[in-house]
Image 1: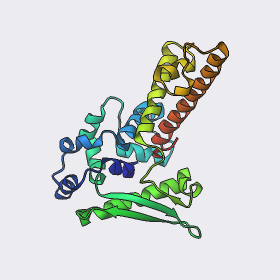
Image 2: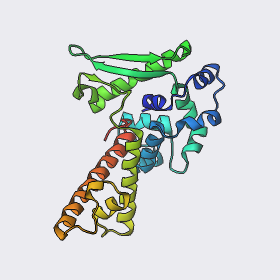
Image 3: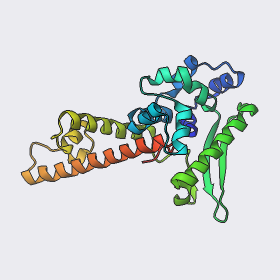
Image 4: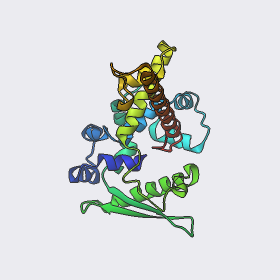
Length: 247
């Protein structure tokens, strides 16, 4: 989600000032896109067969998918760096360092929500309109399509997302490993993938384990891998629809 990307990439006044002055370039801002939500959203779309199909055919099954394409464009044959220089900086650059979203509170008696923002003293006034406008769009998306606001607790913070970029990266690593191994060696057991990636330390077998203990650990590790693959697939599918991050 664009909003969450700017939170992750917040680097202080120098970036804010470069955005405000219009001097920010793709080259100068590129270091700030790594390690945050934008990078893993990009990766989700690269892994999405549906998104690739959408790009190839120009046909979109939902407005969310069409909006996602408008933001990212075709990603099939480009790296994150190439995309940032060609398209990403233009669409996302102005929203990288303005606001921190502290709290989103769904209103009980009306279909609305209250948004609390933290803005740096150096935040240029001319950036406020664009940022708030995009924030409202995201709130409508969450409420209308994914239902996250309506089903969440009364006070739901998207500043401290429940799904971190690091967690998303791990789930995508597991998904990629699973798909690669299942293609090249379809008989491979899930627990072997989990042990290789050390996904569940408690389910790692040891030399002194009895046969029953080994079997129990293999089952547990297999379940761990299966659940992470399922969540990784959910991240990829939802990212294609513009709902991100969501398992």
